[in-house]
Image 1 (spheres, rainbow, N blue to C red):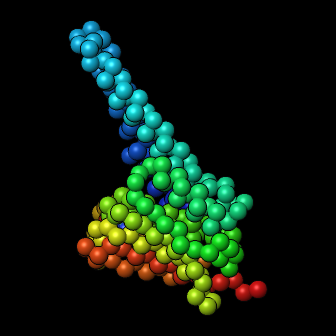
Image 2 (image 1 turned 90 degrees about the vertical axis):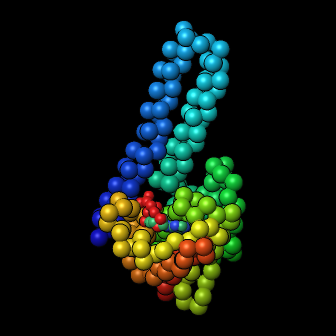
Length: 214
Ligand SMILES: Nc1ncnc2c1ncn2[C@@H]1O[C@H](COP(=O)(O)OP(=O)(O)OP(=O)(O)O)[C@@H](O)[C@H]1O
Ligand SMILES: [Mg+2]
């Protein structure tokens, strides 16, 4: 089962690489080609075009760095979930202007194992990336807390929300993997995942994980 979860994650990464940086670099190559022709035909446009292509290259670098971070957040291993989230959120702040708030007490992550912490991290990461990609929110909240014997992680956005039933019905046709992977990972830690959303109402993703018995 763990193998299939990892396989889905790899599929998703392969597709993201294909849709993102690969296409960006292809269009950078095309633009460079255009610039080469402009040298003869309309040299006055060359400086502007060069600025554009430089910006595209920089954006692509940022994206790839971000994907690499997704792949292997070392800090998760060494310092745990809270520190990894802090770092992740500050990196996102470089990418766009959505405000992301981490509401958690440092040390709350100690209630679950390191393995469970990394599962929680990946689920939060997917929920945050969904909010950024699909919801156009002004704010995203990431919360960690203990409720008795249960560790709760939430991602809430104040964006568009969506019709969860409709998405679920057509899920297989969409080529989407995010929500499926979130549920698969939830099962790995005997957790429970609830997605509370409606068009116009934002989205709340709540993951509950039983705390470890000492
Ligand atoms: N926070 C959100 N706000 C608005 N719509 C959302 C949100 N999260 C998910 N959705 C909707 O649910 C769909 C399914 O999400 P899912 O993460 O499974 O797929 P995806 O993000 O489209 O692709 P993938 O995650 O595989 O890269 C999305 O395409 C989007 O329409
Ligand atoms: Mg997604």
